[in-house]
Image (tube, rainbow, N blue to C red; front, side, top):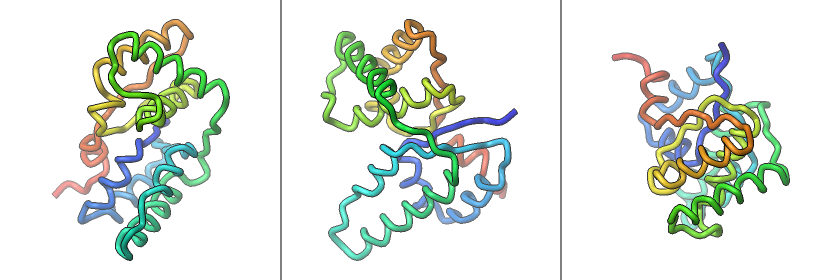
Length: 169
């Protein structure tokens, strides 16, 4: 069975900090039953990393290259339907007492979940406990996806990627 997944932006930054980054990336790319999808809002977040120093310019370039290699030619397009679904999540999130505004990072988080739900992806990997994986946000996804007859993807953390793809020592 092929596992269709999307990585939140923070996953790529975490991968870059690993001492065995290349090995983990190689294993991800070699796993034929594990497809990581490219979604333009994630790539834009990586591209918008501030480059105030030479080191930060290099890091951004490395992150974008890693992103492109891992996602390969697996693209998911943004659409009005995905944006509408993300806004429904947000409206319900706010009705449940969510504190973040639409123009914060939560907009991209909700777009990622909307994309994954709309396209029937299996897993979203993220380490974002404040917004994307906050209790109120999770309730909003569930509620709206039930109303829209969509399956909410499973959520796994960065450590799950390491456990799956890091060479056992």
